[in-house]
Image (cartoon, rainbow, N blue to C red; front, side, top):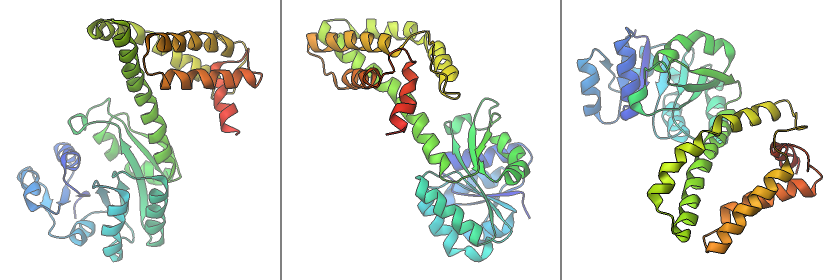
Length: 287
């Protein structure tokens, strides 16, 4: 019997398998396309001919395929092999799919962990890489050493399967807020005649304030401490109005700054003038 089986050998699944092999784990692998197993077989992996063989070969099975839905299809077809196993699901999917997968596994007497890999395949095995995991604490304790081989800063964040999809959506939105901010910033610069290379060169200067923004958020939101902020809702509303006015004056698309301004004014209209801008989390969350 091997230590861990891996189902799905795309770029990520292959990186997971190779990293475990390089760190002394015995690994069984399965993939629909047999040619993808060949480099891993050369590195010492055992190749399973079927999903059932892969599941039977190890106490833990890492699934890394297209989606939770496809994982459920494979596992349902091989449900008789689930009892007593731990399935570590590293595919993608929504909250409802994750909950359905967890229900399927529990009904078949299998333990489960569901995770997000916050990295490209080339980062697997590095000390700074993070796999964000949900599942029962005792299951995490049992398998965290293997998971931390795959990403040194991997962490357990909760027990409900659907939590992870929401966390992914939150973090993805945060990152894409920055991306779309740059896109709209380029639009106003373009309309104002500012060379886009000048704008691009100044972005790192602006990024210097991001740690203070994160600190502002961390100091106010978790504890709902919105009083006496370094900058109030009113201050932000005024600054956002100035930016919005500039977008409109130069004829740049203003959908994003308009949204920012509207939200800040919603806070002001609700009487949050002297509160932190982040009080919008409570205001909007209670609607």
